[in-house]
Image 1 (tube, one colour):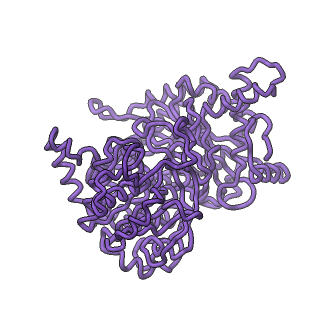
Image 2 (spheres, one colour):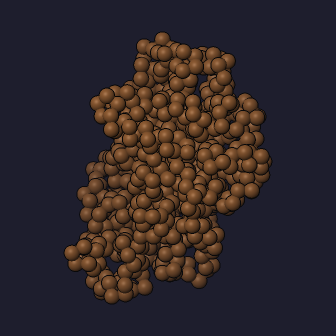
Image 3 (tube, rainbow, N blue to C red):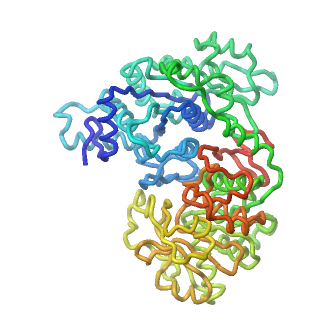
Length: 632
């Protein structure tokens, strides 16, 4: 392994090779920085992803970096209620959910180092100080922290993420938070230095800001953006483009006012208004020639092609025309914040569009299904059951802790007994096994040792290599291989009858191998296992129309145009298309799964879409979306 000077972080041979190729060829990396102003939650991640896609459509190789100014080392120990889901990468990195946006939009594979946090930066500097690398110098924010940030960006930007050799052409960097935040100041200083060091022709800054419309006045107000840009400029960063978030399209008078007071060219002010689905955002950028402004700032305008987004445009229009619904009950613990299950929503949407169905989500709080709620709040319990029974399919996603577990078991039992298509992910698989042990094997006290350490029938147990004292990074994480132990099962067929698959994991508990034989004799089938044959990765109920549980998280590798095999199977089963899909499943292989060419809307191409924002019962709404549209 090789150390990178100035970072104190280990890097692999691919990174070293990319850096060497870059230096040898004299190739200059181009950087696009996306910042946010006025308020958080404007959609900087979607904007950054859309910019990356637009540049990719110009035949440039693009990579992405997300900067999160919090002190946590990574997102692994953060509550989904506070920060949304934890996205897991192939290398086991637990990162911000925006990296999921980047991977889906650009069809790339990022690493844990593509998510920079203050915790990581300070840890690397402190480690160097403890080793004596600074030779007695007083270690300070400037220059040591700011130098470490710049070195980290430069090193990670050179890593190939698209499966090709050599470094990418452009790195899109998103700075989390809002301009003016105290925790962002070291990054602002570092990026100001960085822009000066790499040169004006290699750095482009795009500022995403809110232009609100006050109901009383009824006109867009530019003052918040003026103040935001003034703050940005006072910190030494000059925006090349303004991306203005608003409910409706900004007229030329508003743009002229912004141009005058923000000192940004009129043609470099882009209006990003609410649209039917998120796939329209790259199209909005293209229509307003944002790519030309970016390419001009990067001295690339004369050497790249016009953006080719024909298939993307067709996909966006097709998504708008979906009317026939498929309703999925999402039974979970964090239903109060849809971002907690963002990748699951994305995967469901990718599969729904592939099956030409409009996805409707019934949010069901798992604890509301329990007997205790029926006694305390019968109306709440009745509403939860009505939502569950109204669904065409049931999903129980991953989670931690015992709150709502009994409700999840109830949901799995309901789906099993009533032939409702079911997909259990991670904990969703474990509770399906617990239900089967209780209901079919009549082991009433069967449980997971996570919820009952003294249970006499432990169906689910703690992994032997796990840590019970340290939470961060101690789970079974990242890409792991699963081998199929049956060829006629639905999961194997959906994955194209391959002998093995690679999917991403994030868990501490697993099915007890000592109970597998007993469960299989009762009719449950463990169709996928790890290389040792001791870890159960996929479980199915052969007698059921579609009842599948997986220990891994297939949602993390789902892409629009090539949806996750198991989510595709779920939606196909819920919409009466599964038999046709399985018959034609030995077709073109997409994302590790075999997709039926006979289902309209399926494509062998790769770069489409994203789910984001707030999703309510019966609709897909959220940032960049109108009330009737899919938030893709």
